[in-house]
Image (cartoon, rainbow, N blue to C red):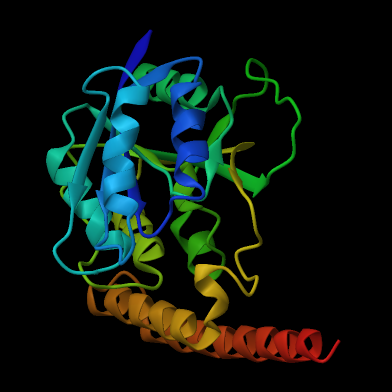
Length: 264
């Protein structure tokens, strides 16, 4: 049984992890109608590898596109969004995976609550354990002011309506996902969160190997996102100054922790 969901995965030199990600989609109790892979101009044989995977799944289920230059995951997601044909879009990164009940729980709730434009849920480091897919599926409305100080939305958890006009900022490589979620929440009140870990990562987001390991660039990406929110009058100058101060403090703490770990 299929759900009217397009899954978009940005791909960059991901031959070691992409099969795990795709299989976690294909093994859903309610399978998305299509999976869109967008190669972000990988410098290895990733694109050829993606094409080789198509015969492992139902005909036409895997769709593959590529960018002519490396532009970051936000631009790759926008490319996939252009080609999505289903009513809902879900995002997954090439090195992450989903719990088997993720689509069933999230899509069925959104189909029953049609005013909802976006939902998300918690995520955790992978552990092989079961999650109850029936009980306590309580989606709570996302509060914009809370999200200002703490990003609770992992990209791997998001499902939204395809018809939303907002997009990732092309070329923005850090906090591009956080910025889009904030703009959606600011424009639409019907955004909801489920406190249930239906997605998995395989490393801590701030580990040395993660995308956010470059703390300074991540810090600058967040400040840029806050500046855009301020320019669009979603936050006040007082809030902007407060956020800047808090994020410089967080940067200092994380930098000290990394330095301490490097000396161990």
